[in-house]
Length: 203
Image 1 (cartoon, rainbow, N blue to C red):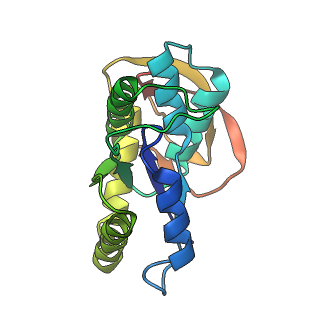
Image 2: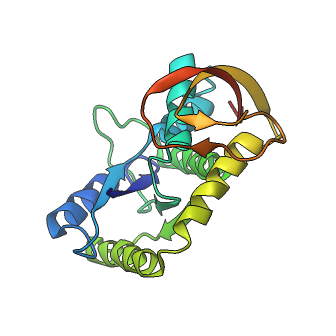
């Protein structure tokens, strides 16, 4: 099963360019399938918070799904701003506002138990080296992966701060994901089994 790593950050920070460079170089190490992703549903959650928009049932369901199925690795690469923004037809945020959005991204991922790996503003080649070095380190250690993923489930479903009950589709999980409960035990099945009441931080 491939290891899926999320690259997140504010608009204009160079995520897409870095992602393209990583994909051209191929997975590291060669014996392990590594898939880098440009953002995740948690980035959409961060944007909704930043804009003050309500969290839709569909978004809440998708955030719940990726947590329960443990779709992504616990390590998330936070691509830091380059110090400027190049405006485009779709990128109309100011640089100052982008820094606020970056803080919201950090908060959302940390609330859900992810470990942020800082990728500083630098040349593209240096950023590639930072990401690949972290991949090598994590793949060589290996043993901490299950613990890190359990931490994500524990923090997401056992968190009390700003948590509310929402009706969500929990995919292939056993146990009641309510406040103060044990982390969910996910069986890996992608079959939607039944609706349960879950508590997600900040939704």
